[in-house]
Image (cartoon, rainbow, N blue to C red; front, side, top):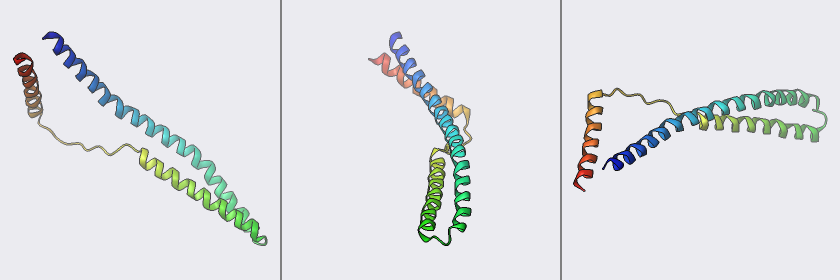
Length: 122
């Protein structure tokens, strides 16, 4: 019986580690994503601004102006993709609730009693 309890404890311990590690990994991924997005957006904004200034000078040449319009539109599209990625990578808002510790402990104790009953009845 002792080995069974040890196995249950180990499985529970591993599950707890996974529950703790997953949010930490996601938070780290979110931070890295925000940093990457910032590093991409800065040169992208500089490119877009420079192209808009150059576009004003190209008003006489319609084919070059059309190409510059495409480049400006695509920088805007890239910025939108980065924004959407950041919204996806952002950790969800916390949904904090108040709980009665006595109820939580009673539920936990009840779960252990059920496991104990199953183990000793087998």
